Image 1 (cartoon, rainbow, N blue to C red):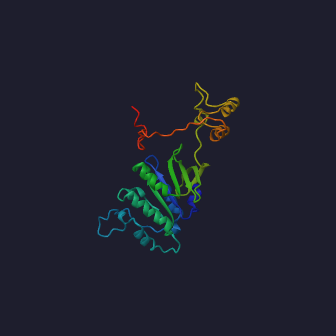
Image 2 (tube, rainbow, N blue to C red):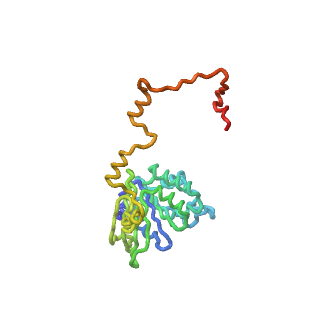
Image 3 (tube, rainbow, N blue to C red):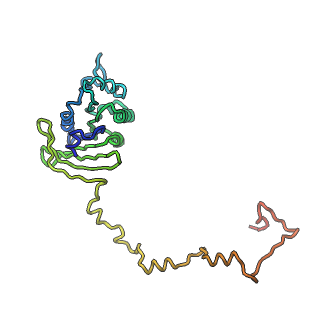
Length: 269
C-alpha cells in the first residue's frame, strides 16, 4: 500500500506521516516530494516562520484557506498541485488545533489541491490533538524503527470513502535517490485481530456455578407459570363471572365521612 500512496493513486486524499523521536519520517516525506515533483511548487516557510523580518516569505499565521489559495494560484502547472507540509507540528505550536483542522478540511474538500501530504511529530503533542488531526486524514502512515539498521516499519491505516478501513504494515528502506524499496508486507482489513492469548481466554472457565442451561432445564423453565402472570383462561374467568358467583355490594351511609381527596382519612395510621 505504501507504493500505491507514493504513486499518487489516492487523488484528493490527505496523507499524514506520523513519526517520533525514535524514527524520523522526513526521509519518507522527501520520497513523496520526489514522486510529486511535476505537481509541486515550493514556498519557504522555514527561514522566517514568525515574520520577524521586514519581508517574510510565509509565516505560520498565514496558514489559512485564503492565503494558501493565493499561493496555490501562483503555480504554473494547470492541474491542482500536491501540498506538502513540513511540518504540521510547527504550525500546531503557534496556531490552535481547531483552526488547523478547519483549514485542512477546507483544503481537502475545496479541490484547490490534488492531495495533501503532511509530516506530524506525534510525540510533541497531546494525544487528543494528534487524534483530531489524524481523524481528518484518509491515510495515516506511522513510521517506527525496524529490526535492521537501515530498515523502517510503516504502519498504514487507510480509510476509504465507503468507510472501509484497511491496515497494512510494510518494512521498507529508502535509497539515496529517495526511492522506496519494500522489503516485506503484511496487510489486514478491518479491525486488528486479537492476540491468541485473548482469543483462548474464557471468562466462564473457573466459575463455581453454571451460566448455561441444559435442554431439560430450558424446557422446565418455559413450562413454569410465573406468579402474577395470568393465563388466558384465568383472565376469562375473572372478567366474565359465571351464574351463581358471589358479589360484594356497598351502599354508602349518610353518616359516612368520605373524603374524595383522602379516602383513608378515617384510618388511624
